[in-house]
Length: 444
Image 1 (cartoon, helix red, strand yellow):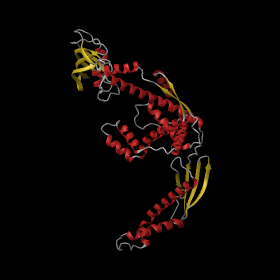
Image 2 (image 1 turned 60 degrees about the horizontal axis):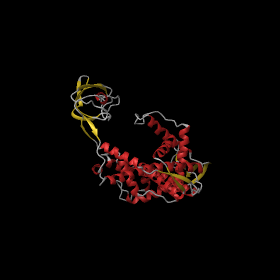
Image 3 (image 1 turned 45 degrees about the vertical axis):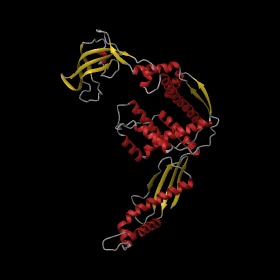
Image 4 (image 1 turned 30 degrees about the vertical axis):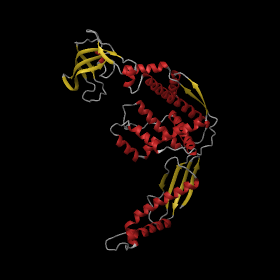
């Protein structure tokens, strides 16, 4: 195989590989001879089929296999010798494909962008600030009160009392569309908490002020995007009978409440709440710390980027943001989404940081264990209740999906590795200050 360089500009590489016809013919003959002892053909004993007949019968297919193997080997040898790491799959084209005939040399062009050399960077001087929030007694108490509210019961109001937001009304109702009852539109003794938003918009509001014994015609309009196509956008009347009006009664904050939530005592529940709150604060603080680290790395290290990677990332960003702005569009039946300059700038940052973190992780011999991957798959599978087995099989059969799960785990481990060697100071802040720091991340 002869290799001739045709391009070497920046990260762009181009080569012309020539496979001499004689070498290709020799490979085909060798493969036929290897297969000959096992070939059976009508009119010949096993292993006695003439080479000329074998070549006529199988030559074209074996020729194609030999070409592919020779080109693949030449590319592997070239990459090993040059040390290049293609950013994306190399583009391989046969120069004389339309006019090539047996006996001609095979000439192919190979083009790719090489991954850049990542400069050595001393990260020991990186200075970071970790925000620390301790859960206050007020925050623990607020969480307890929310738990008590969720565990609330309801008791009858005085006879003749009008229902208020937050009250529970016990109702019988029958829904009518175009004068006819519809399936699923009726119920008896239904407990509805006013203001919960659990019914069609406008329904609960019309029951505010109702008293036990009242009969009310609730007039509403089903939303245009309602799940039942036969009801979407339709006007409806619900004949509603109010049977009881009940006031909310929060649960007492005591040991009994704690036991309802799996704790042995109120003190134990408070401890669990404090731990949960501080774990949430710690997670939010890590987001702020990670962004600060990535900002510093982005400013600290510069190198050439493969245009192909940046372009692919920019298109992905543009596509993702478009779908976030158009949540009603679930498929891909839309026009071309062109990345903006802002998308390209963000893509450059992501590609640069991705390559840098990959290099740091490789040198530090950071890997993602099978156990970590299993945990990631289990977490993701919970989003598909009832379809967990199908999800597991999809992940097992899809290397790209595996990489999408592995990448953020690897990145977080590399970030932790860098933080361990950096100069990190701690700053005590309030919950509100931490929330502002998190909000600022979305604005960048």
